[in-house]
Length: 250
Image (cartoon, rainbow, N blue to C red; front, side, top):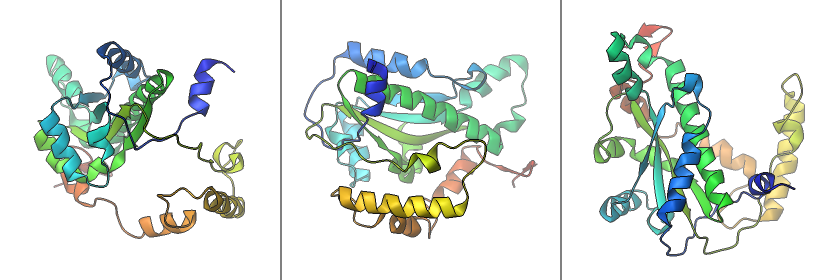
């Protein structure tokens, strides 16, 4: 197996890190790998913010107490969906930026950001480091916009912890391929139900310590209520997702 496939197939999320200063030469390589990710129209609709201030890192960690790895890892990066740069560039050609509040613009920026982040994670793992994405920073979005001086038309999507692992994690099972990689059409609900029940048994036997609920019940509870509903207002304040059916929201 070639090294790239080995890295991809060996991915594990790690939340416990050893104290370690990552050499800047390797930080730069990871950043370069992120910047080489595919992006829509080569727009590169993202900004990566390295949190190098100990005080700022501690503030973010304290505001997200369920994620102590933010304070412990060698590098903590925040990935920001960013169409502000497109606005600044477009002003040179008298662009109206009228589409900035569309759902499609938010999807484009989110996709570009996720592709860059995945490149960064794979690059870090290829260098022998462990990684952990932190999506729950979105619950701090309003604070992060202030703390990071984010302009309009940007939004902090997730963080990425990188560093030397303090524990050896097991390779977590994935959903059956029959419901994740399919041909020509989406699988019917009967196939999905059977596969999800099978996977729940697999995950129960896997017995990951942090999982307190059966797999299907975990998501039943999660999707009972909207996650971080305050971000609808935050996104609108940031000039994102302000349009509905092509009509500008009030």
